[in-house]
Amino acid sequence: MSNRTLTMIKPDAMKNGYAGAILDMIIRDGFRIVALKQLQLTPERAGEFYAVHKARPFFGELVEYMSRGPIIAAILEKENAVTDFRKLIGATDPVKADEGTIRKKYAASVAENAVHGSDSDENAKIEGDFFFSALERY
Ligand code: ATP
Ligand code: MG
Image (cartoon, rainbow, N blue to C red; front, side):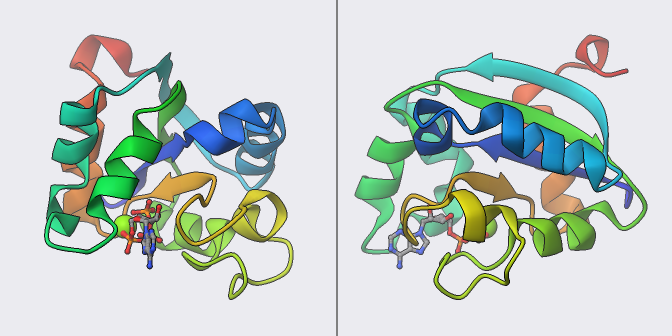
């Protein structure tokens, strides 16, 4: 399904009150919201989501960060959704992110970078299924 991606508005952005502004940027960029929910990940579920990074030195910090408060998860639809959304959010490190990107505007650091975006069509499907049942998609 090459026209869908999965995003999370991460705990730092939620706490800072940026969720509305970030969703506005997403919608204005032409993404349609297929599914959306607010939830708090347990450390176990956060570790499962980012399992690919298990061996990295920042894994413990990443799990603590992603489970410390509520997030918003959403499936987004647009042509070339994965690529276009990565463009909209900008580089992992906000210092390196282009002007006008979500991370440039709202991310504090490479560790606490406001939003997630899937990195491939395959992972977009896995991550969408991680958060949403078929009945939660419109
Ligand atoms: P995401 O998967 O959340 O969209 P990304 O694909 O831009 O981010 P990844 O390499 O997948 O970047 O890293 C996943 C997350 O791990 C980052 O978003 C960030 O929260 C954290 N992270 C990545 N690199 C570092 C680092 N050098 N130090 C601390 N945390 C990091
Ligand atoms: Mg990633």
